[in-house]
Image (cartoon, rainbow, N blue to C red; front, side, top):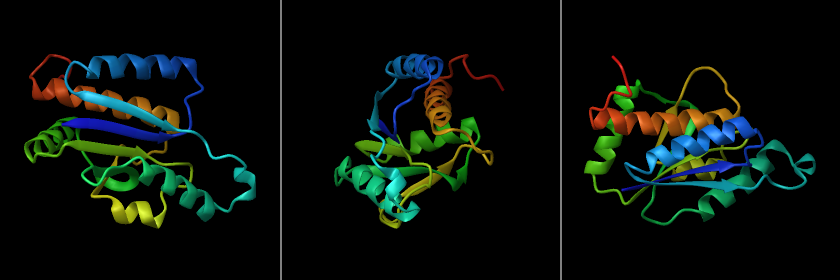
Length: 157
């Protein structure tokens, strides 16, 4: 299985980017992982919230293939413990999915079209984090999930 994370907008905080790069490299020892950044939409000041979500949604959906399984990182998604998330990853791998795609949306969330295409939603926390921090937290949790599946000492219980 391959895992792809799609996110809107670049990470401009160098410290966060360094950590994202570190966990992306660590993750590569377990699974093929790609982080794909969709550039911020130009002239958002001239767009309504729904127009911005629609434009972002079109860009997100253009990055998918028909066989991809789409999971949205969404505040109303399912909450997992780290062990529970690792078990969910194992289920996805066992089910024969070729590419599992997670998406971090823009500042207003996702368009109805993207919600309709998604096969699931995951929430990282009830708290709100910047989109840049969510990237780091999610990639770290992917890494943690694979270390749990391999019974490696990274995760302590």
